[in-house]
Length: 339
Image 1 (cartoon, rainbow, N blue to C red):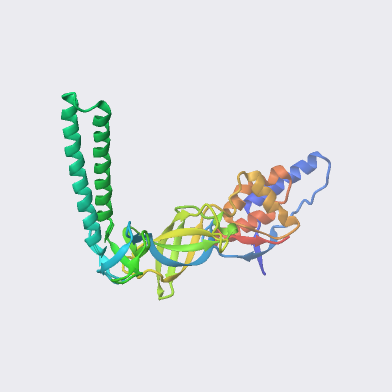
Image 2: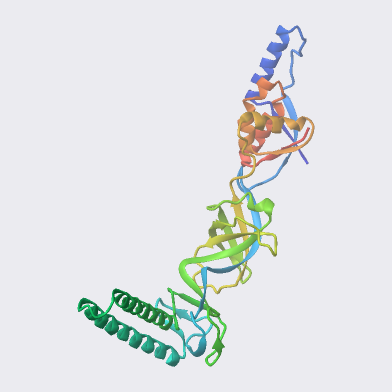
């Protein structure tokens, strides 16, 4: 605790003079020679910016879009062409199933569709010659449409019997090897797409997540690069807590980390601008600052400035507030006012 002695500022003198004038009108006596020195005990507390609050957390680096890739149908894995860490471009072949059975299914569906078309055409001619009935013609048309639908389904299965890169990115994990029997939809590869960059994923407690908004600035330091500081911004704030940890997921988009591997541990400091001493009105700020008559409070220069206009109207002593503002304006730091 330091003691600061400064001459009374002009604002405080004017307020004191006004108080004496009011006291004279009411018949109260006042000291004709007020003291010109005011002693105010203050304790400075540096902050990054008035109205700013820093939220610290630890998380891991990863691609914004991490896509599990698998086959639409089950089968035997014929080839896996990439290993973990391999980079790929959009459309590159990554893995494929044994296609012999699948291709046979496509061929069978193709033949069935061709036969159904011939049958439908023949029954249509017979119907127009009054040999076939309307019901027979309609049944032949339905059979043709069903066969064509089977062919389309077989071709879709053939298309998804191979895995290609959905975009430029890197293979993060490889789960199977060639020769393995795999079920439909089982993940074969985990692919990190570079399309939307990289993010650091952190979990924040409820009291912290309420202070953070998308767009808040952040600084990131990786344990692997302790001497380098990266910049970024909050991209996404989770709307619900994780059922296992009870924390809210938050993603911080980081600049210039395209060459760093996924999974690096990072320490994140988010500058939340939505919290702090930002009162809705000067009346509220005045009430907070004049609580110094009973206790000690932390006040930023912005809060003190917005409250000084209410000092005379409330009849509360503005002397300490003016001196606190003068003391802190030189260093642009808030100070603690002690009663």
